[in-house]
Image 1 (tube, one colour):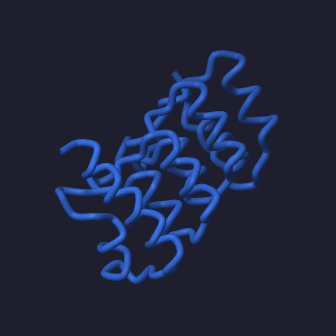
Image 2 (cartoon, one colour):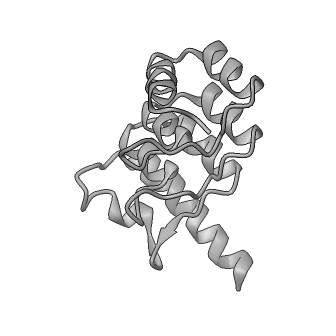
Image 3 (tube, helix red, strand yellow):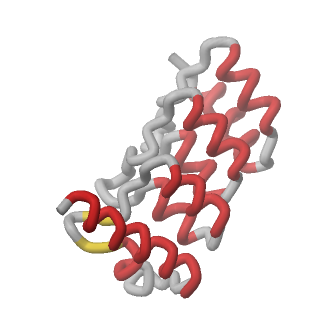
Length: 135
């Protein structure tokens, strides 16, 4: 269990890319599944910052790669909206879902005002691959 103050400190550490602080939090028993008062998980915040070392650390500690905020905003969406190709690749490699309610995230990004063609293509290719393996 984390207090709001601890979560605020941890979120600041994530925003500033302070990997040792996040590792220290986890090493002393901090909850990798912590959710702040706004409903954001640690992984969602790290993905929105495009911080791949912290993303890997959190995933290795058991964070859910597909945990959503507001039923659609996943770590993959956050990384794509942040324009972080590296973070998108890490999340896809770790099993991030490429669709929301059956619609590919790559098709939804332009609707939300984010349109990096390389990121969209990467997600689209992963989505097409997941459809082939589930058929």
